[in-house]
Amino acid sequence: MSILLRVVILALALLVAWAIVRWWERRRRGSVSGVPPGITMITSASCVLCPDALAALKAADPQLSVRVLDAQSPQAGAFAARAAPTVVVADRTGSILLRRTGRSTITDAAEIAATARRIHVAV
Image (tube, rainbow, N blue to C red; front, side, top):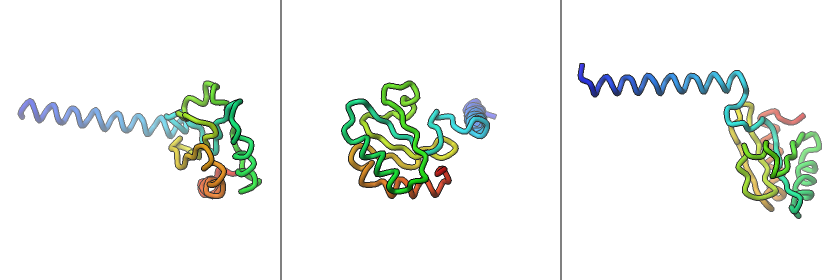
């Protein structure tokens, strides 16, 4: 067997092992990315749209549970939000299903609520 073939087989084996470890970590902890499941809204003290965005989400579905984080908090780093308000809907594995920033957090509140209901993150 040639050396090149051995290297390719070893690389594939390492890739498969890495994929299995990531899958197992997600299954055990829920999220490798650090993004918690559900709806999270990133806000800031100077955000003019944030109260309206939260009100629009509650109006779209009063049963929604929205986690509100300040953009300066350590937990907000997992979302890589560059502006406030940012609304993120993530599933139980931490995969981000929907992200809206700025005025679209208000105009797309019904879509955000519908996505959350589809993955059963509404309380």
